[in-house]
Length: 329
Image (cartoon, rainbow, N blue to C red; front, side):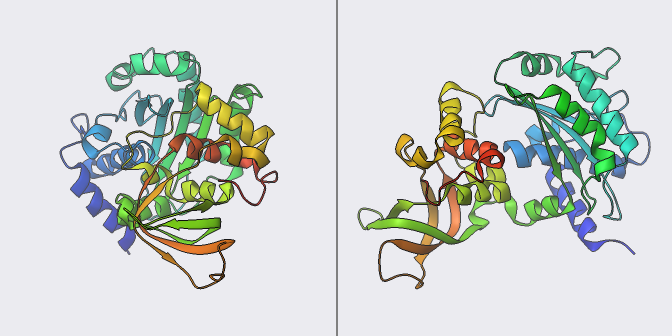
């Protein structure tokens, strides 16, 4: 029996990418090739904010692709995105250890700038690859996207873990990894493309106040952990209407990170906060008798500014979760 949710994803992908993905090298099973390439392009839309036409031009899938299905150098985030995609019609599973090993071998060749024998699509990205692996401050973001319902099992992930352990060190994190599953893809296609669908429930502001004119605005102190959770859930959709995404390692961003890791209790004093724009904001009744704390609902979230602080919060969160004070802005 066909998986109706997979069929819905296929329908939406065709609406988005029909005519935007090169299939000239496909001789058979064209629909499967299209689906595989479409979710690779979609991953770049999700992670980099590209439109379908831009994302379609990043596809490298084909014979001699080094196990890499899409490549994109994002200078605003200072990341080289390297995508592998797997289309599963039944919506089950993830990736085998053999397939993961092939992907990792391709990543190793990319890191060593060994592109001999690669297809024309990979070679067409040669300058971007060289720049991404050569420039200080740039990271390689590995993305595995698939329509399975399970995450990569530990045994299959072992080649990736070994590569990241041997490449990353205390000085720099060169390799990043993220897995996008069926749930992530479906959620994004259903609602994630339009930032107006982002609603933030139970946002706690401490020592809050209100400005009535010329526009209604609330201000206060919010937990940095809460902001990190927004990014974990919504990713770059938070910045969809901003002029740029988080730029990764820069002098200013590294300074923000240093405070987060070494002096988190004083983060509120060193940094100038964030601004959130939304269609409406509602204050809930709980704890409403004072301004010490307030519980708010942000309806149709539109725009998050100060992406530098948000990006460093997201990047540093695994290292500082146990150090965070209760209130940080």
